[in-house]
Image (cartoon, rainbow, N blue to C red; front, side, top):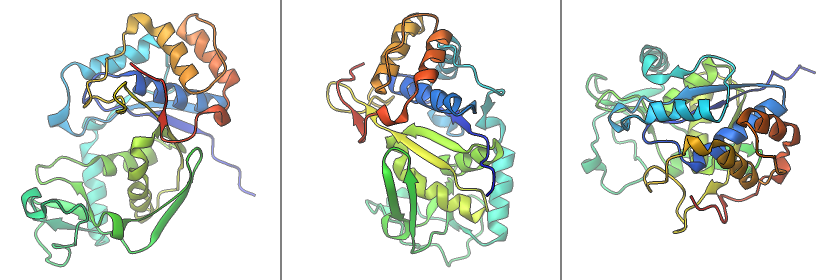
Amino acid sequence: MPTPKPYIGRFAPSPTGPLHFGSLITAVASYCDAKAHQGKWLVRIEDTDIPRIYPHSEAHILACIDAFQLEPDNDIIFQKDRLDIYEQVIEQLKSSQAIYACQCTRKMLGSNHIYAGTCRDLKLDFAQQAIRLKVANQPICFEDRLQGQQCSNLEHELGDFVLKRRDGIISYQLAVVVDDYLQGITHVVRGADLLDNTARQIWLGSLLNYPLLSYMHLPLAMNEQGQKLSKQNLAQALDVSKAPKLLQHAISALGQAQVELDQPRIMLQQAVQQWDMDLIPRGDHLTGIYQ
C-alpha cells in the first residue's frame, strides 16, 4: 500500500480588494487543517488579473498574514512573477492539441453561458486571440471532504473554457492548477463560491497528468442582506489592530471549540490542537456572521 503524500495546503488570496472576514475564515481553516495533519501551509498571491488589482490590497494581505501570525512554511509566491511558466504550459497544451484559438467576443456570445465550440475547428492563429481548452462529454466527479460528492459535465454545463484572454491575461483556472502542482499542494481548503471551478481544474489537471487533489469547500460568511462577504459587496476590510478578537470570532464561526484570547500565535496553536473538521457547519453559507 503506497505511503500517502505529506499534507501541503495553501491560502491563495487575490489582491482585488482588502482581506475581509470571509477571507480570514478561509485562511484559518486552511492553516488549522494543514497543521492538524502535521502538514505544511503555504501562501500564494493570485495576481494574474492585473487590471483588477486594487491599490494597496497586496500590502493589506501581507499585513494581515503578519498581524494574525499565520506563518507560511515557505516563501510567499506571486503569480505575476510566473507568467513565463504559464506560457510554457500553454505551449504544452498546444502540442497535444488540447487548446485552440477563439475569436468570439462577449458581444458575439451574448447571454449564452455555455460555449458552443464555435471556433473549435477553425484552426485560427493563436496570436491576439483568446485560448480555450477543449472539454469532453463526460462526468467529472470528486468527493468534497465537507460538501460530499460533486459531479459535473463540463460540455453540458459550460463548454470549452478560456485559459488565456484576448488581452493576454492568464486565467485563474490555468494559474491555480499549475501552481498547485508546482508547489506540491495535496489539499485545497477554500470557500464554497469556488466549488463550481473545481471540475474545470480537475479536467485541466488530468490533461497535464497532474495528481488529483483533495478538496474541502467551506460555507461562506454572509452579510446582513444575505450576500456573501466579498470585495464586490464592499465587505469591511480586516482591522489588524483587532486581530485576536477577529481570530477568535473566525474560529468560532468554523464551529470549533473556543480558544482563549491571547497572542494570535498562541490562539492558533490551541485551535490546531482542538481542530475537528466534523464540527464545521455543513451547507454553503454560515448563518449569523455579519461583518
